[in-house]
Image 1 (spheres, one colour):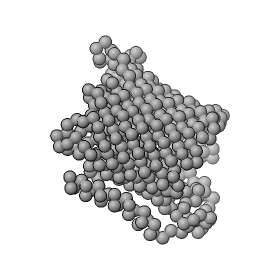
Image 2 (cartoon, rainbow, N blue to C red):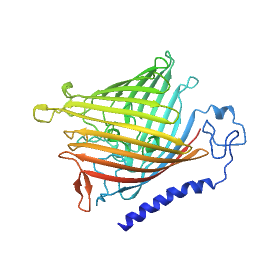
Image 3 (tube, rainbow, N blue to C red):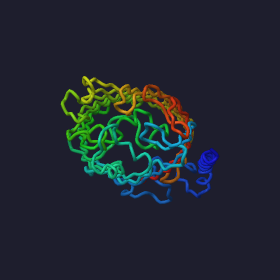
Image 4 (cartoon, one colour):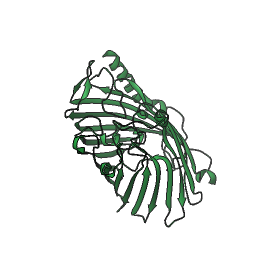
Length: 403
C-alpha cells in the first residue's frame, strides 16, 4: 500500500512541476502573439519569415508519449482492469502509448498521399482483437502499426478520395489515442468497436453539408480472423451548420466461422456533435446484432451502448470534461462476459504548448459499475469480483507535431 501511494504521489508531483520546468525554458514569442502562444498555423516561433516551401509543406512528422498512473481503489492483485483493451494496467506507472509517424497530404497539386504510424505500449496490446475469435497471422507485429496506407484524390466532381491499407475507423467518436479525446480513459463502446480498419475506402463530398463514404475491410476487428470473407460498410455525414455534425455509419459482414448471410453481423453507429466556441457536446450510440451459429437454436444476440461527452474550455490552457455512459452485452458476445456496465468519468486538463510540442496534463476520476452473471471487476490480492470500481488517474502526454 505504501509503495502504491508513493508512486501515485511521485507522478502527481511530476505532473504539477512539468509546467514550471517548461515555463522556465527560454522561448521567443512569435510576432503578434503574447509569450507562450503559438501562431495559428502551429509553426514554431521564429524571427525569420517562412518560405513558400515551408508554408506549403505537404509532409508532416511527429509522435507522442503517453504516461499514466491509474490508481484503482480495489487494489487488484493482478494489476488488471478487467475486460478492457485500453489502459488495462492499474496501480503501476505505465507507458500506455508511444508513437512516431510520417504523413503526406493528398491535395489538388499533389494527389497522392500516405500515412505510416508505428506504436508501442499497453494500449497497443489488445485494441484490435475480438473476444473468442482467432488472431490474424503475425498479429503481434501488426498491432504495432496505427496507420499504414496510401490515398489518392481523384479529379471527380468535388473530389473523390480513395484510400487503401490500415486507416482510421469510420466507427466511433473516440480515438485509440488518449491525446485526441476529451477524457483520458476511453468509453466502453470505444474499446469494443473498431479503432482502426484494414482494407479500402472511398469518400466523396457532395457539397459543404453532405458527404458519403463506403469501405471494404477484413472484418469488425482488424487483428481477428473468423473467416476469409470481407465485410462492408458505409457512412453518411451531414453538417447543417458550423456547429452541428451528424454521422450515421452501418457495418455488415461475416464475423463467425459460418459465413452464411443469416449469421452476418449488422451494426449501427450514430454520432451527433454540437460545438460552440468553448463547449462541445457529443452523443454516440451503437447497436449491433447477429445470429449465433454455435448456440442452441442459433439465437439472435444483441449488444448496445452509448455515451455523452461534454467538454468545456474554461479559459486559457484549462478544460474539463464529463462523460456518462453505458454498455449492455447480455450474451457476452463482445466483452466475453454477460454484463451491463454503467460508468461516469470526469477529467481536468491543463495544456502546455511550446513551439512544435504540447504537454497535456490530466487528472481524471471515474466510477464503473458492472452487473450481470459475468460482470464485475477484480478486487484484492485474491482478485475476487466486485460490481464497483473507483479510479483516480494521473496522466502526462507529450506530443510533437511538425507544421
